[in-house]
Length: 150
Image (cartoon, rainbow, N blue to C red):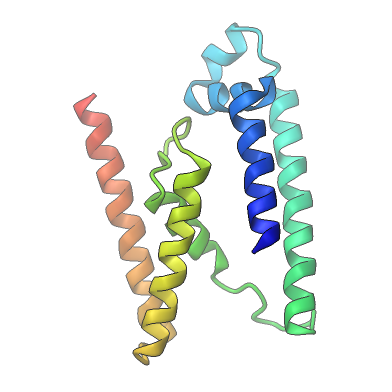
C-alpha cells in the first residue's frame, strides 16, 4: 500500500507539474496537434513505453515475491481486464487525453471491492469476468455518448 501511495504521488506530480506530463496529455488528446506544437512525439512515446515496461517488470517481481513462484501458467491471467475496468471506471477517456490518477485509483479500489465481494458471494471467476466486461462496455458507451454531445 505504501508503494502505491508513493508511486501515485510521484506520477501524479510528473503528470501535473512537468513538461513530460503536459506532453503526454497533449499526445493523448491530439497527436498531430502536439507534433505541430513542437512536442517530440516519438521521443515522449518511447520514454512512456520504457517507464511502463520498467513498472511492469517491477510489478511482476512484486507478484512473484507475493506468491513465492514465477512459473505459474496462470500468473497474472486476466489482470488486464481489471486494469482496463479500473481505468474506465476512473473516468479516463478510451480515446485518450482525458483522465486523472486519482480517478484511476478510485477505479482500482472499486474493482478490488467488487472482486472481493463477488468472491465472498461464491460467484465463479467466469461470471466475475462477465461483470467486469459489462462494466468496461458501459464505460466505453458512456464515453462515446459524452463525445457525441460535445
